[in-house]
View (cartoon, one colour):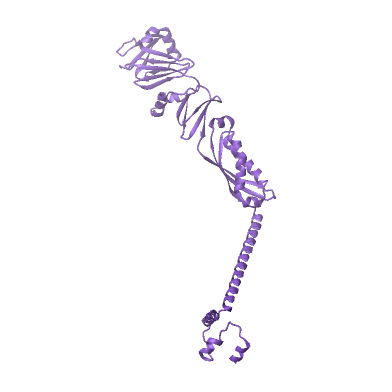
Length: 382
């Protein structure tokens, strides 16, 4: 076929390479062997036998094949019609048969942890056919840094690079590459179920909330192995320190005071390590069952006392109002008479049957009389 070659060996020794065509050989030649080569695939694994053939018959082999050798700090990318068909790692060899389509071999100097070129990275990202791209992935560390994140590359445990949001790839040859991500957004932390004794020996269970963010990422990555665990411990210790110096009444009267004290203790400490503490707030203060019942009774007694005080205040106000009204009516017979009619109206509303004696005058004058009568008025009535 047009895209095939044949490698001829006799008794294990190289004899010739034949291009496409028709050839005849004696069947009696038992030492004769023919190996078909498909040049369309371009690549043929460079085993020791082929390498020996190439070195011992370089002039002939160069006409039909191309040898690619890479140094210890070098890789090779083999393209055919702009498509990557093979990848040669450092200190390796590849033999490529020449066919109808010319091959392009691109060598690149690389070091451990060196970034991939953007073009190659995009080719790997868009690849859906596998092949040589899958081979490259064995020697590449790929990672994606999301928006509002930063990444730190460690090569064999040593920090070498900080990168922002995006997709990255680094060459990795028999070494340890690790990318650590840090989220730069505002985050929250909960310190829950902290059982602490107050100054007056009351056992409380307290839940704490805090908002924080990373303000200096390089400092965080260099100073702290686990920055979230460190912040949690600082908040926990500060909470225990502050609560142990205050009584139950102080904590219940003003929770903001507790928040301010914790903020003052923790904020400066974590700022030196690249963290910013935005807010701190006590979410819950949970009392033991017995203490909760006692506190409930205290609150109930306080409310009853307040209600009694309000009731007495209103009674005093009503008595004062009645006294003022009596003073006004004492010197005003007309108002006194109107009050008598008001009382008469209220009485009649509560009576189903009313028997009147003495006529209308008796009803008007004798039935209701709020004014104190003199002896002369009493004799006149008789």
